[in-house]
Image (tube, rainbow, N blue to C red; front, top):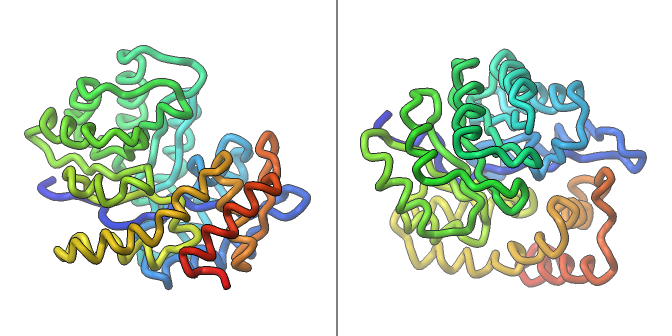
Length: 297
């Protein structure tokens, strides 16, 4: 591989739910179609933002299958398939492959706290069990464990492990990874909206975004402007989006994003426990962010 497989702004999709906590599949279908119409570069269902830990396997499968069906090849679908159980991650990855996903996103195992050797064996086992590409998902803020640069370079020797979603917010990391993996193009996508432009400047290829649930067109424009060399425009757009990047993390993701979606008439705000409804103060923060960004009157 001589260039990035995935580029631009890819949306880490919310999973709309009815007030009783059941899946709101009608809203989900409309939401996915809207995302594509707004110019997003790819779709990432059932990750952190999709509340994957509280979905049953049947629900997880349903969301992956519907995303692939609606996308219909217009944009790639990178299916969340992570778990802190390696065998479960393999099963989810095999399902995503059978359903027609472009790739799978495999998160660092949370709670177990594996060693670097354990991480290497976990990701290798998933990659060896399927034929579609694997993106590592490094998010130490939620899983405690950080995939070291050395382990990432070791994993990159597996032809099926093609990149990483980096949610460390460490802008040295993409430089270090690129230097450590010299013999293969390793697809690096930011997992932190606030660093999207800075990450590109450090050699990244794009972003798997929470904010693009709410502002897909603006997030896509940031990426396109950067890729086409319109640096000042990319920075100006990123500055406009900054209040939203901050506001959508005033409480644990995806509660603020779902509340923002409800204000824009895109989907309901319901999350499953243990995520609680937003506090009054947080609601005001999200409203103010939408207003300042120009998305809400």
